[in-house]
Amino acid sequence: MLFLNINGRETAVRSDPATPLLWVLRCELKLTGTKFGCGVAVCGACTLHIDGVAQTCCTKPVGQLRGAKITTIEGLDGAQARALKAAWTRIDVVQCGYCQSAQLMAASALLTHNHKPGPADIDQAMTPVVCRCGTYPRIRQAIYEASGQKRS
Ligand code: FES
Ligand code: FES
Image (tube, rainbow, N blue to C red):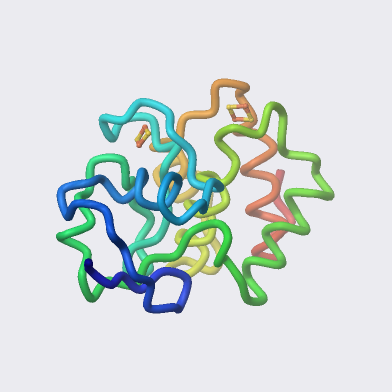
């Protein structure tokens, strides 16, 4: 057994240390907000925060994450997260919804490190998370709104 810090709690994990974090979250811990897309770290659907940095988790063995602070969509909290979720809702960003946990995690990490991101900053931060529904214009608008910018 190993222990991981997930959403602020020391959490016992029984899976083999070679198991990717995504499957530990979804199958063992039933934290299903983090999604499976490609399984090879290219689509971004499984993006969460590891030590405050937006990262994919479908190829990261849990055995390598001892001592790391892992935050999933279920644990995304605080004023900035509330501002993002409110903007997402008001602008009605979501289409099918599949990528949106990852989009919010990527947006949150962006605003943590850059309080007033411009278009190029947003593109750089959000491009790694593929949205098959093409919600990128609304995502950009929601990030502007959550960061208090009047841009379109
Ligand atoms: S499922 Fe992890 S990047 Fe696609
Ligand atoms: S909202 Fe459908 S994949 Fe992004």
